[in-house]
Length: 221
Image (tube, rainbow, N blue to C red; front, top):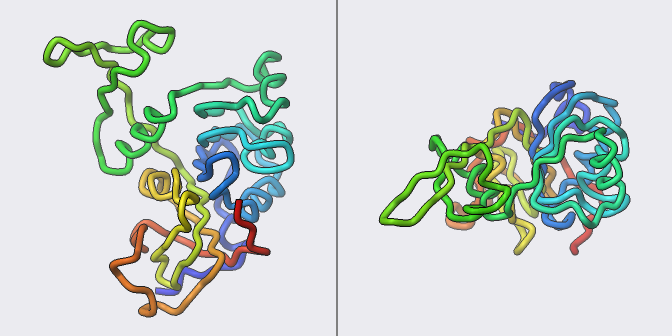
């Protein structure tokens, strides 16, 4: 199956009120071409799930700047000053999740778990409203899985069947998010024919990918 699409074809089904997961760590591993394409659709009521809000002019913060975000899940947002203003003014519901907990909650959705137990946040504000479970005398918070409608993923290489290889630390949240969403679009720096990629090197199997688009100018950070 050839999953290579034009940019327009790949983002056509993304709509208002979707829950969108966006790979990247301070924009390393963020599919900027896909972000720009979705921003251009002028959607509303989006829930964005990303490690962070990016930096001015790059990353998930573009959705914040546009005013298309209703709810934003992240582990930190301090590199995007505009986010803090939107949060304090009540224009965005900000849900801050410890970074490891965020990753594991996404992973839990991808592998079909009912949640995770973590000691992170016990005895803090994070604990409020959550169930606490004691295991071997230690308290853990029960954190539910986080799933999405759409994952926007950045890859170094992909074949036409959607098999993916990431580049070094740009892997970060990308494969976890691909597993946790119903519709997955990969922006790949290099697209190659199916069968040319060493199966032992594949980091995300094509079964999780719905569309592959060609990235623009390659930028490594």
